[in-house]
Amino acid sequence: MENTALWFRQFGEPEQVLTLEQAPLAPFISGTLRVRMHYAPLNPSDLIPITGAYRHRVFPPRIAGYEGVGIVEQADHPAWIGKRVLPLRGEGTWQRWVDCPVQWAVVVPDNVPDDLAARGYINPLAAWLMLKKWPVAGKSVLVTAAGSTCAGLLAQWAKRQGATEVYGVYRSAQHLPALLKSGVIPLNMDDGRGIAEAAGRVDVVYDAVGGELATLMLDHLNPNGALISYGLLSGKAFSPRGKYITAQRFHLRDTLAVTPVEEWQGWFESLWELLLKTQQPDVAVYALEEWRQALELFREPGRQRKPLLRL
Image (cartoon, rainbow, N blue to C red; front, side, top):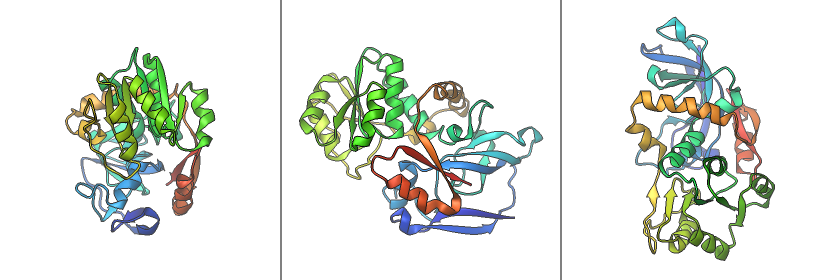
C-alpha cells in the first residue's frame, strides 16, 4: 500500500518547495495508531516553518501539517479501530496515512463534525490556554490579526469569559462585518494613533503580528497592562521591552512539553463543548492534489473561508 504526502525538503516559500510524493507505507509500529486521514486545515503555523523561520527546531526533510482528523485503521488493541481521532505529534498531517503514538491521539466525540474536528487543535487550544493563563473577566482586551481564526476565538471567548470590551486590529475591510457582528470594536491596521490610544486603555493585548505593530502597542500600553505575543505574522521580530512593561511569550508547543498527557487530554473535554457553541469561518475543501489552489485561497486578502485538504 502506498502513502501520498506533501513534503518540503528544503526551506523556502511553500508554493516553491512543497512537493506531492508517493512512497510505500512503512511497516506498522507497535504502540502507535495508523490513522487514515480525512481532513487537514491550512494554518499560518503550518506554513511559517516551511520558510525556515523556526529552523532551530523544525527542519527538512519533513511532511507538512500539524493538525487534522482521521479514522484509526490499525492498532495493537481492537478497541481503537474505527475511532475518529486527532493524531497529534505524528509525522505531519498533510498525508493520507499518519502513524501516531497512542497517548497523543485525541478521540473526537460523535457530535463534532469532521470540518470542526480537523481544526480543533492548534488555534482553539492556544486561545483557550491563553485565556486560562491570562483571564480577562472584567477587563478590556485588544487582539491583533482580528480576521484570523485564533484571534476570532480569543475575541469570542474573551467576551464569554466576561471581558468588558474587545478591540480588534484588522487589515482588510472584508473582515469588518464579521467583527462588528461579534461585538468587536474594529481598529484599522493603518490607524496608528487609534491603535496607540486603544493600547493605552486596554488591560490585555493578544498579539499575533509582532514587528512594528507590537512595538507601537508596547510603547503605549498602560503600566498595569499585559501584552502576550503568540505569533509573528509580520515576519518581523520586535524588542519585548516596552516603555512600562515587557511582553510575555506564549507558544503552544512549550506548554504541552511541560504538561502531563492526562491533563491536556482532559482539556479537550471542555474545548469540544465550547467549539460547538462558537462561530467559525466556513470551509473550502480541496483534494490533496489541489494543494496549490488551497494555498491560493489561503493567501487571498480578507479571506472569509478556511481551506481544508481532503486527504
